[in-house]
Amino acid sequence: MAGFYRIPLAYFSISSKYIFCPCAIHKTLPIVQTFLLFHLFVVVVYPQADLTKAVITLQPPWVSVFQEENITLWCEGPHLPGNSSTRWFLNGTALQTLTPRYRIAAASISDTGEYRCQTGLSVPSDPVRLEIHRDWLLLQVQSRVFTEGEPLTLRCHGWKNKLVYNVVFYQNDKAFKFSPQNSEFTILKTSLSHNGIYHCSGMGRHRYTSPGVSITVKELFLAPVLKASLSLPLLEGHLVNLSCETKLLLQRPGLQLYFSFYTGSKTLMSRNTSSGYQILTAKREDSGLYWCEATTEDGSIVKRSPELELQVLGLQTPTPVWFHVLFYLSVGMIFLVDTILCMIIHKELQKQKQWNLEISLGSGPKKNVTSYLQEDRYLEDI
Image (cartoon, rainbow, N blue to C red; front, side, top):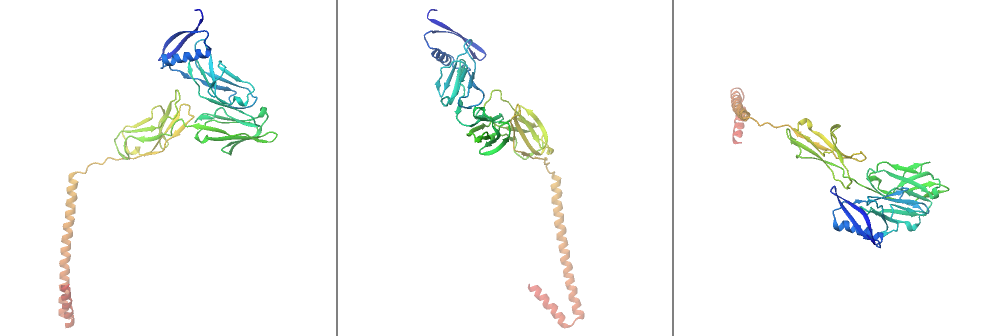
């Protein structure tokens, strides 16, 4: 076709089906406009196209380097068949480079900024901030943002690769690692406790100190909480569902959590994709402290729940009617016996009193009789 050239067939992955787009575009259109028209077609003609996100990698892998050092950025993402053109952006402005590789030779301060890239069948990458420094000592890291469980490598790097020894690494101005020879140190599994400002110091001709680097560690999922389906305490014989509840804070493709359940030192269920555990028929011996764990597939992150006390009470059988009858009869009998005893004691006291009076009348002087009579009258008055 005179005056035109044909772009290779475009393939769009839509629910495991493919749409073919034989597109003819005029020669005179700049390649950037061609690139934009293609993405406009994707958005307008088929807005549900499942485009992946491009990813930038660095070689060497450090996000901060010295002036005059070389660094190469690579853009990884799906391309159109037969077309590997890639767009690069620095601080939002498109760069002239259209290849998957963007090379910075003899870096200068003007190369500092946020880099993004985009391939033919991808959406723009997340920004990567590259910093160019002019100093004697530099703490280098591969990223400033990590997800808990990922490794963090710290490199204390001297200007023009000069030897650095007696290196000290600091977090929030507190020394945590001394290395007489090795200028690199790796934290194998980061956690939230590794958030902070890092720097290093080392000996060369003098002792030098690097600028600080802010490191952020993001939490992947919350610590689990163990919950029971029934209110506690509960009676024997009930079905109890225990659930290990957590929440994913970051989405990762193919991420799967595994759950384990324990009571004391006994393992009830180990590394299962189900977050629930059942006690089919609760018994008194099932009482105790229960807890659970949630972990990633590779075991890089393990989080434990607080303990949950499970109390199982024995069944209370109803009291038979004959027991109530016997109980009240016993109480009645006791009351009757007490009443009879009280009457007998009272009569015996009366007899004793009359006997004492008769003895006094027969053998004692008159004043004794008078005394007893007066006492009787006094008691009667009372």
